[in-house]
Length: 196
Image 1 (cartoon, rainbow, N blue to C red):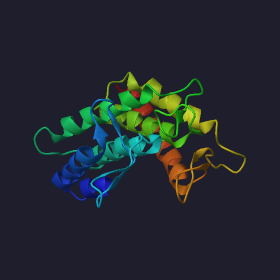
Image 2 (image 1 turned 90 degrees about the vertical axis):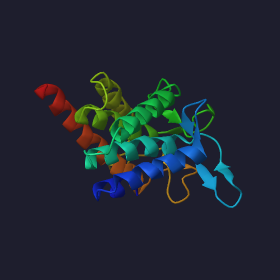
Image 3 (image 1 turned 30 degrees about the vertical axis):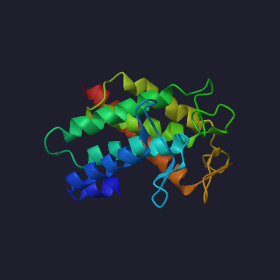
Image 4 (image 1 turned 135 degrees about the horizontal axis):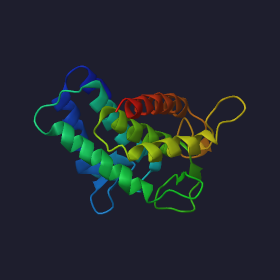
């Protein structure tokens, strides 16, 4: 929804959506988002910082900034700054294999690859579009490379939070889409660095 609102020129609505998620799910102490909110109970349903959920936050912001380059006032800089904060907070949980625990602060959770793809996409999009420093290119490319090591003989990204419930390692259409988005962002960022 966030990128769609931005793409249709409804940037204030897109920014309001991010603000609503931040009010309900963001923990400023850790810089991370909880997984899911229960409106009836008025509290997080899954309070742990789900890696893929944090990846979707930064990827959604990156895509929204890409689709709508004109934002009123300081909204663009504010959203870009928040995306960088969440990216940085997530990277603290990255393991030696380049991947992340499914729940970031649970080291024994299964190793999950789509988080790396989402964060890589956001970092590379930020570099390509100029709202992240060029130094993020290497991190973004390395995140995609770590996830690419999970591609099986059929071209599926494995070891991701699997559809339909996203609670066990498997495959998902979302992870396949993130793979394509990430590699398109890698090409854009590489071209922008070559041109600059």
